[in-house]
Structure formats: C-alpha cells, structure tokens
Length: 322
Image (cartoon, rainbow, N blue to C red):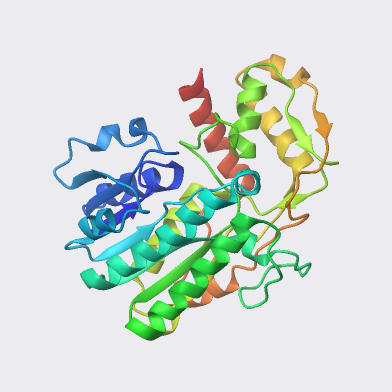
C-alpha cells in the first residue's frame, strides 16, 4: 500500500480520489485550504486510521513541505478552476495555479516523492480548431486560466528533466459527477443545470447551444489517476494525457438529457423551458479528445459514456440536493 498526498482533496475531484484510494487500503493525506472544497465531502473519511487532513495552502511552501513528508505519490488537484473566475481575477488564479503548483513541485522534489500526477486542462488547446484534440498539438491560450494550466505542464517537464521527478499531467475534459458543487458564482454547467431543473427554473445556455464538450464522468478520471500512479511503463511517464471519453455532446443535447433523466423523478421538470443567452468570453467552441495515447500507454478504457455518467450523477443529486 502507498502513501498518497491529494492536494485539494476536499474538492469535487479530490474528495472522490480520497474516498477511492482509502477504499483500496492506501494511506491518504489531504491538503486543502477549503477555498473551494468542503469538509462535508471528506467528513466520512475522518475516522479512518489511514486518513490524515492537513489544513493548509499550496501558496505556502512550508505547508507543502509539511504535507509531502514520507509521501510516495502526489495527486495534485488543488487549483482555482473556471475561465470566468480567471478573467475576473487573474492575479489570484495565477498565485494558486502557478506559484502554488511550483511550491508543490519543489516540496515533492525535496521529499523524494516517487511520482507527481497533476490536474492539467483541456483549456491548454486554446484556439486550436483541430478535432479531435491530440496531446502534442495545442494552440494559443484563450484565458488567464488556460495560461496557468499550460505553465503547469512546462514546469512539470522542467522538473522531470532537471531534477528527475517523475510527472504525469492529466488534461481533464469537463469532468462531472457526484460531489460537484452546484452553488457559487463559478459552478460548473452540469450541477448548475441540475439545480435549476430541480427548482423548476430555466437553465441558461451560453450561446446557441451548438458548442460541444467531451463531458467526462468522475469514474473515468479516477481510473486515469490510478493508471498514471501505478504504471510501470517507462514510456508512459513525464508526459501528458487527455482525460476524457473521446465523444462530444452539444450543450443543447446535454440539457435535454438532463431534463429527460430528472423527469423520471419529477414529471414537471419535462415542462421547464430552456433559455439561451450570450456566448461567454474565453470559451472554446468545440472540445473533443483523442484518448488513443492513454489507451496505448496506460491501458485506459473509459467506464462511463455521457449517458451512463449523467444517469448516475442525476441519481446522486436527487438524493443529496432535495
């Protein structure tokens, strides 16, 4: 069994990773400042002898050093997400996503961590119009957030080459699923739409609804993190991977699926109207990943497509948001 540090472990993705690896018998330490994460996401893990919570901030190097002592693997999820947030406040986004990331790399290097996995982003593809997105062909970033996530990849590569720290970046494509927060100004589209429907309110689609995304269920992300952490394939490390399904869904298709699945619990939801608004600054029109590299080098096989993932997510929200 391994000793795993999960930064941002009280957040949506981090808490799911924490729960999974505790369930597999590993020792898990979570570092979180609860800026966007929630204690209730990990409360049920607190009594486990294999679980440790460190309340701290990745912008503080001392906290990073404290958290990495004796750690085998780091799953770095801590970040300030959201393109609109980065446009509204680029300085804080940069402080967390770049300075905090560098702190974690330094602390991991100093602690002799075996491998450093980190949450990269599909936003790195920027203005590239090529579809599907292939790891070695990117465009220019379209937001401050996208810049920070690309800088993460550059720093990880330098630390691999200069210090011998094994790194693997996972470019997440629109991850969704249980524990994703529907509240706040920067809530992701799926939990936001679910909350609107459950309240019999009209969800607002930015644009015409033709923009498409490779929506990726949380269980696929967990699989990719585990494969990245455990691979013994030398060719599979010190690189980046698309973490996605390899299929795309338009926002109109998405909202119609959500309405259909939620109407099974509440028939009135089928009558809720959809509202269309202006496009959002910094948004990429279409996103579709090639997952061939992950399949070839890591043995990745997505367990959930959009329909299967949405059905599970809707069930979870119905049981937990009512």
